[in-house]
Image (cartoon, rainbow, N blue to C red):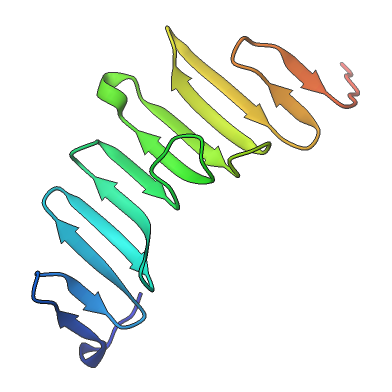
Length: 116
Protein backbone atom coordinates (compact mmCIF):
# COMPACT_ATOMS: atom_id res chain seq x y z
CA UNK A 1 0.00 0.00 0.00
CA UNK A 2 1.28 3.46 -0.86
CA UNK A 3 0.66 6.09 1.76
CA UNK A 4 1.68 9.73 1.61
CA UNK A 5 3.05 11.33 4.79
CA UNK A 6 -0.23 13.27 5.21
CA UNK A 7 -2.29 10.02 5.28
CA UNK A 8 -0.21 8.37 8.01
CA UNK A 9 -0.34 9.15 11.71
CA UNK A 10 0.49 7.58 15.03
CA UNK A 11 -2.40 7.01 17.45
CA UNK A 12 -2.18 7.54 21.21
CA UNK A 13 -1.82 3.76 21.71
CA UNK A 14 1.12 3.61 19.30
CA UNK A 15 -0.78 2.26 16.27
CA UNK A 16 0.38 3.36 12.84
CA UNK A 17 -2.78 4.64 11.15
CA UNK A 18 -3.19 4.89 7.37
CA UNK A 19 -6.36 6.67 6.22
CA UNK A 20 -7.45 3.94 3.77
CA UNK A 21 -6.88 1.20 6.36
CA UNK A 22 -4.44 0.68 9.19
CA UNK A 23 -1.86 -1.58 10.75
CA UNK A 24 -1.62 -2.26 14.47
CA UNK A 25 1.37 -3.86 16.13
CA UNK A 26 0.51 -4.95 19.66
CA UNK A 27 2.88 -7.16 21.61
CA UNK A 28 3.76 -10.11 19.41
CA UNK A 29 1.09 -9.59 16.73
CA UNK A 30 0.71 -7.41 13.67
CA UNK A 31 -2.89 -6.94 12.52
CA UNK A 32 -4.18 -5.25 9.39
CA UNK A 33 -7.57 -3.60 9.36
CA UNK A 34 -9.85 -2.55 6.52
CA UNK A 35 -12.13 0.19 7.81
CA UNK A 36 -12.71 -1.07 11.39
CA UNK A 37 -12.67 -4.81 10.61
CA UNK A 38 -9.56 -6.86 11.34
CA UNK A 39 -8.82 -8.66 8.07
CA UNK A 40 -5.35 -10.17 8.51
CA UNK A 41 -3.01 -11.06 11.36
CA UNK A 42 0.52 -12.33 11.90
CA UNK A 43 0.62 -13.55 15.50
CA UNK A 44 3.77 -14.95 17.10
CA UNK A 45 1.97 -15.79 20.38
CA UNK A 46 -0.21 -18.35 18.56
CA UNK A 47 2.30 -18.97 15.75
CA UNK A 48 -0.36 -18.27 13.14
CA UNK A 49 -1.10 -16.23 10.04
CA UNK A 50 -4.68 -15.70 8.96
CA UNK A 51 -6.84 -13.76 6.53
CA UNK A 52 -10.57 -13.14 7.19
CA UNK A 53 -10.82 -15.45 10.26
CA UNK A 54 -8.40 -16.92 12.82
CA UNK A 55 -10.51 -20.10 13.19
CA UNK A 56 -9.29 -23.11 11.20
CA UNK A 57 -11.99 -24.26 8.77
CA UNK A 58 -13.87 -20.96 8.62
CA UNK A 59 -14.03 -18.93 5.37
CA UNK A 60 -10.59 -17.49 4.73
CA UNK A 61 -6.98 -18.60 4.88
CA UNK A 62 -5.34 -19.92 8.03
CA UNK A 63 -1.81 -21.20 8.67
CA UNK A 64 -1.07 -22.48 12.18
CA UNK A 65 2.08 -23.96 13.70
CA UNK A 66 -0.13 -25.77 16.24
CA UNK A 67 2.60 -26.72 18.76
CA UNK A 68 4.72 -28.49 16.13
CA UNK A 69 1.83 -30.08 14.20
CA UNK A 70 1.33 -27.50 11.44
CA UNK A 71 -2.06 -27.14 9.79
CA UNK A 72 -3.52 -25.01 7.02
CA UNK A 73 -6.90 -24.22 5.53
CA UNK A 74 -7.85 -22.30 2.40
CA UNK A 75 -11.52 -22.20 1.57
CA UNK A 76 -15.04 -20.89 1.76
CA UNK A 77 -15.85 -22.54 5.11
CA UNK A 78 -18.30 -24.92 3.50
CA UNK A 79 -17.80 -27.09 0.43
CA UNK A 80 -14.80 -25.66 -1.41
CA UNK A 81 -11.52 -25.96 0.46
CA UNK A 82 -8.00 -27.35 0.72
CA UNK A 83 -6.87 -28.49 4.17
CA UNK A 84 -3.72 -29.99 5.68
CA UNK A 85 -3.64 -31.08 9.29
CA UNK A 86 -1.85 -33.48 11.57
CA UNK A 87 -4.14 -36.09 13.14
CA UNK A 88 -1.69 -38.90 13.96
CA UNK A 89 0.13 -38.23 10.69
CA UNK A 90 -0.45 -35.56 8.11
CA UNK A 91 -3.81 -35.65 6.37
CA UNK A 92 -4.68 -33.74 3.22
CA UNK A 93 -8.26 -33.17 2.18
CA UNK A 94 -10.03 -31.05 -0.37
CA UNK A 95 -13.46 -30.48 -1.73
CA UNK A 96 -14.63 -28.72 -4.86
CA UNK A 97 -17.64 -28.76 -7.18
CA UNK A 98 -16.58 -32.03 -8.87
CA UNK A 99 -14.00 -33.82 -6.69
CA UNK A 100 -13.39 -34.58 -3.04
CA UNK A 101 -10.58 -36.25 -1.08
CA UNK A 102 -11.42 -37.16 2.51
CA UNK A 103 -8.79 -37.39 5.27
CA UNK A 104 -9.16 -41.20 5.26
CA UNK A 105 -7.97 -41.28 1.62
CA UNK A 106 -11.39 -41.81 0.05
CA UNK A 107 -11.53 -40.07 -3.33
CA UNK A 108 -14.78 -39.05 -5.02
CA UNK A 109 -15.20 -37.67 -8.53
CA UNK A 110 -18.33 -36.80 -10.52
CA UNK A 111 -16.82 -38.15 -13.73
CA UNK A 112 -13.37 -39.23 -14.82
CA UNK A 113 -11.44 -40.29 -17.87
CA UNK A 114 -8.27 -42.20 -17.11
CA UNK A 115 -5.83 -43.05 -19.89
CA UNK A 116 -2.38 -44.36 -20.13
